[in-house]
Length: 307
Image (tube, rainbow, N blue to C red; front, side):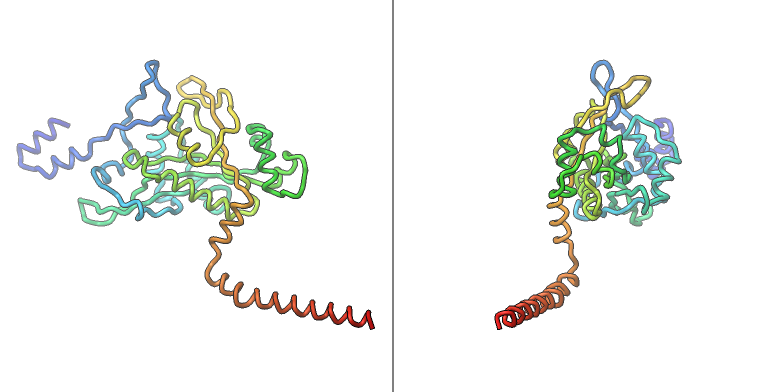
């Protein structure tokens, strides 16, 4: 690299030399990777092309667009996951998720438009993303949480009915966050929290969704702190759940219970203006008319009985 740089300086091709410098891979850290014996984490070379594009750029967080990922994002999704997680994912893992956006899976990406210095055109980059799965409240979920949480979920399904929580939960489902991450340069800017909010909004729209859960490796303290800050509670610990480089690690299961009150408030807040207009000027007046008519009818019946 140094030889190439000097060679280009010698031939006064400064532009090419600058491009070579800019294409140097950045060194990054991810706390998802296990620490060594000294408690230090290995420096990783960046794989995503986004690092060079955003180098030294300040972003306006209000201009971030949160939307679904597509097949066009596949290469960058794979590269970002290699930077963020120590477990390898093959192409089929991502293909299944991206091919089924309206079925068992859904995705959230935090997109931002920047100008490409090379051609002065806008380039859409991914600042963060999450891959999620709709999961039934199965034996796995029930066996990896605690009875107190199951009771809390049960009450949110139907507060007026007392049944065994495990039997009750089998008819409902939840969101499982498979992976979530944010580009190194833009962490601690609430992008991750906003992605969680987007996931929560999707879950709140679903009538039979009772919560959002995930598992996190036990040594990833920053991730644990992040989830707890966003109202996720540890409900269990799975021994030797992860295996990395031949060594097994425990996983913590975190859950965000969705309450009936939250769902009602969300629906009220997100009613469309047309719905509010119809409700105020059509449905409510008709309701009052019907009530008035029934009252008069009842009054007339009472009079007839007296006579």
